Image (cartoon, rainbow, N blue to C red):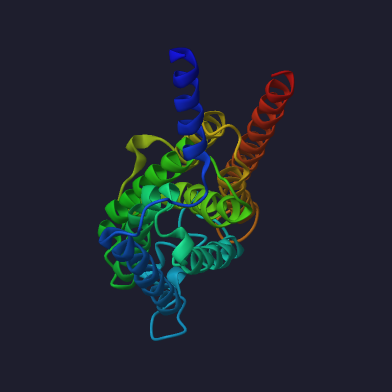
Amino acid sequence: MRERDGGTVCAMTSLARRLPLGTTRPTASDRVRQSGVIAATIAALAAAVYGSGLAGGRPIPDVAGGALASDATLVAPAGPAFAIWSVIYAGLAGYAVWQALPSQATRRRQRAVGYWIVASLLLNAAWILSVQAGLLALSVPVIALLLAMLAIAFARLRRDPAETTADAVLLDGTVGLYLGWVMVATVANIAAWIQAAGFTGFGVSPALWAIALLVIVALIGCALAIWDRGRLAPALAAAWGLVWIAVARAQGGLQEDVVAVTALAAGILILLVTVAVRVARGGRVRRG
């Protein structure tokens, strides 16, 4: 009898964890979280429009003395790479609307990541404003904090698998793309700052420094793919950024063939590892 009761409790607990909707009434914290996501999304989108040069600001490649232009450093991506922001912002806007629905107020996944996404959106806006003001040194800790917020959100989503298509697209997909791109952007931002600060490389050539940074990105991207069971979104975003670094180094005003090849190889390696993990995991699931 006790064994049956224990099994019933375990089954009920497992079922409760899989329930797509919360079973409690929304709390004040839930309402604040939902409103905060909407407000932060509006702030991030407004900052993005300003930072694009459409509403009084200047295009990002033109700020901070051109330190963030595609030909400023060897790890700067070509201009078309930034088109990924359109996809990320669209996903964030969709997420903001979806998470505000009454059915989403008490869900565990929303509670787990809502405030972390709010933080990422505000930091995103802060980064744009800091570089618009020419504060390149300030932009480095801001983007590092942004990367940390996204990593925490991604880790929390990993612990609680997606239950619906909306979960997979608007939460996992958006946060994954956001994380993968910011990972590459952080490296580019740091390189822009240290070069603008007059860093001479301790006698090591800029190409070797660039290759070292790209190898670090590749290792982190592969480790992330293994840890997150081969999720495609962060791998695709990271590979996208790396490929456009390769394009920028293969042409334009700052060509460096060895860096271009390294960046391209890094992007391909991340994708290959991600696919291999997915295939291996699929095989284990089928055998199970």
